[in-house]
Image (cartoon, rainbow, N blue to C red; front, top):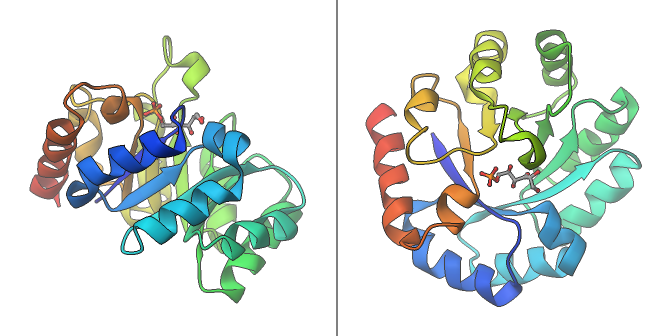
Length: 210
Ligand SMILES: O=C([C@H](O)CO)[C@H](O)[C@H](O)COP(=O)(O)O
């Protein structure tokens, strides 16, 4: 399992400082959607240049103009781009086309998708690399992604699963049994005082379960 740290509501300097602290424990850095709105693809370029050995995911949450927008993301040297699983197949096909041309990857964010299993199968068929169950920040007070993880793991297998949305060191035990390929943690690390120690604990948990 890969640990992805989501950097959402931080400045560029804060982002670099956090990555320096947790670098040895994480596999993927997510340039979160708020950072992309704030800094654009410069955020991706700076992080990729500063930490060339870490995979960078740009959480663009593409909904339209899939090929065009994905090309911009890969030109900025991101390794993974996100597209909304609920959007048109044509848009997702465009994102997949852009990724395949540069041997990069696509994660589909399944937020708000109702026919989860059916849609997940279709997206894998058309070339999406990861299917991410995701509880939006705005509804985390009442919802969580764990039931959807169980459903998606059964549908597409652990290697194609990703999960995000309010995961903490106290809730990681609800995740590891399903062995999702990518475990995405934002506030569960960035919102903690002892970010390095918490990241190390997440790493230890994921490594125990494989
Ligand atoms: O994608 C995200 C959200 O939509 C805000 O952009 C977050 O990166 C994702 O939810 C992970 O962050 P936490 O929920 O704080 O773990």
